[in-house]
Length: 473
Image (tube, rainbow, N blue to C red; front, side, top):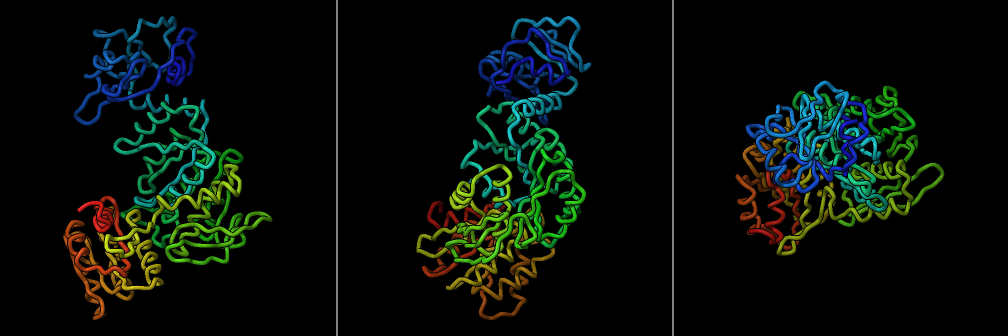
């Protein structure tokens, strides 16, 4: 619920004396409007929201944010000059507020309201598909805080604006995911949400490839951290084990907090042990404290994601008990989940991450497990078929697994490279769709097999896991 006076102040810098009623929420679709709401008339492709102002008012909207003249139809207050009219008299509701650009006006209102409520905002900058750090961090923060993850599908700036305008006092933390391969959008979203804390999603900062499709990720990372407020308000969570991030530290004004496996870091780990599908165990050190943690994520490499999330918890004032409990509960939504096929075969579900580097790490984990091994590898739409590394992935897989199943048109080079590796003990199969993969694997797998299913939700690789579990046909 946002006061109308705040809307005027956000758009003009001045607060009127007689604008006392509140707006319950904001919406850009008239069908979502309820009594007491603000309707923002946006141009969305071929659909012009101005055509639905009457419907929004009929549903109970008190006011509408517009950029086209509506004075012939409804009462209107013109704020295009960026100042309040000298003798502002509010018309009877419903009425329109005319601005130069509805979308930008919505962003100004959102930024104003976010600063007024002042929730903690944590920015996680990632490559497409990287989510393990975000999921770990959410599970941990929710041990103490009400946490909002804005839905940024479709029009991210408008989606974030609406989420912030509709933010309730109960939401104490906002976790904002940003894409490193879209630096302009990243800057815009940070301008609206003004994150206090920033970190780079684990896979994005630990891959050896710092450029993809013309994007310089090292530059994007540095730019992201420079968007944070200076110390003591701003915190940058950085990997001490990553040279790029250590160099970034000297360029930013935010306070730095390093994590890693190097004792020079503020938060560091040693005695790292992998316990297969039971997760990892390690000793964590901070200041003069140390404790053993066991977290249900798979593989030694995941310790960096755990440390990064724990660093956020420490910055936000969580106790070790809250951090340990939150991280331990995170198994239900993590990057690499364990499932079972209907015949009992073990499935390592890694359908959340899409880089060649993370595929190699998942294969390294698979190598350490006992049993007949099958790798089911899908295409990667964001980067092509594993970028230029599909041959390296395929050859590595051929040296580990008993069978490799490549899924999708763009995964054909993986199948060809694996076949060219010339390892006769490895069977290589290519199928066109996830559905064909399910049909094939249901006949091919044995109860004691271990399957690694690696790919993204974008190409529906998760349907293979569901199909083998018997959830869908």
